[in-house]
Amino acid sequence: MIIKGREGSASNATALMIARGGKLMAEGTATSPIIFTSVADQILPGEIASPNLEPTLNGLWGGLLILGNAPISASTSPKQIEGIPPSDQNGLYGGNIPTDNSGTIRYISIRHGGANIGEGNEINGLTLGGVGSGTTIENIEIVANQDDGIEWFGGLVNLKNVILWNVGDDAVDTDQSWGGTIDNFVVINPFDECFELDGPEGVMIATHTIKNGTVKAHDAEGLADLDDNTPVNMSNIYFFDIKAGQDFDDMPVPASGGLLTASGFQVTLPEGTVITDFFKEGTDAFVTAVAVGANTVGADVSVFQTWSWAAVAGELDGM
Image 1: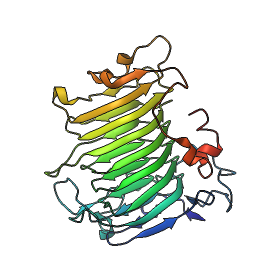
Image 2 (image 1 turned 90 degrees about the vertical axis):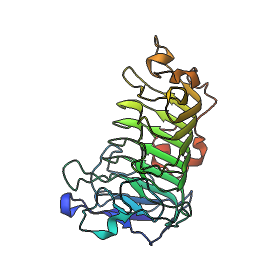
Image 3 (image 1 turned 180 degrees about the vertical axis):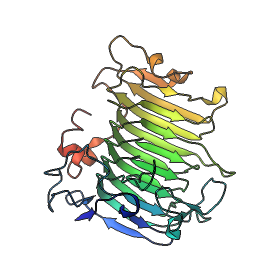
Image 4 (image 1 turned 45 degrees about the vertical axis):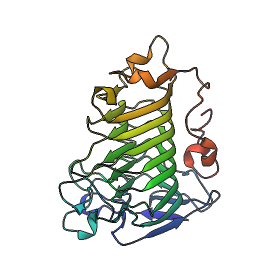
């Protein structure tokens, strides 16, 4: 199945938004994924790669927004989601139902999105605002989004098997004390940070977990940026194709008063560099340097092989 959004920006931007109380039942398969793309895409049913659009072309339509009734850490709740004008009350998210169910989403690829609806206000590839743990999200690919790949605003939804490729801002962006898990993921060449992990904005504090990932930094601005008060557990992540200037900046560990717990990081270093050139403020303690192809942690990319554009394009080869 192929779903196409019209081109446009500002008030003419198009997006698919699931409001609080609604459900999206989007269940593709490993042989027939559901592809969300632009009307400019000439892709046909049965095809995985676009025949005419490059996997770097973004901003042609909006993206997918899912809003729920789960708790968020903000000054007020519910709150209006970014990317949707305040005049549209369907853009409210957050509540007091941790197990809220916004549907089932499996085997989908979201491409060429991130249309700008206002100054510096683009839509993420996948926005999850106050989405509850009753929601199922598995086997997701975001390709060439102008803003973040996936951004969480609170909630407790878990994600499994995720690819974030060529996004124009951060790949993984967490806000307002999201309390779920992302397990088995691949990040490839974001424009800004591979991980932008922000802390709570209200009294509610929840910890999210990021585990079993492979990160190809390439031209990214940085590897990770965390607030001092970000509660997050990170484990079994492999970094490669990194270069000078990309680092884990301002990333305090519990011993220095921060809320990060991490273990099992591996990295393939550029020639002539050492771990502390990239992992600073003591975070080198949970990082091991390995040769190319010698990593023992990271994503299981076999689950992406038949349905993702990244796999068809050879981006996962050798991972």
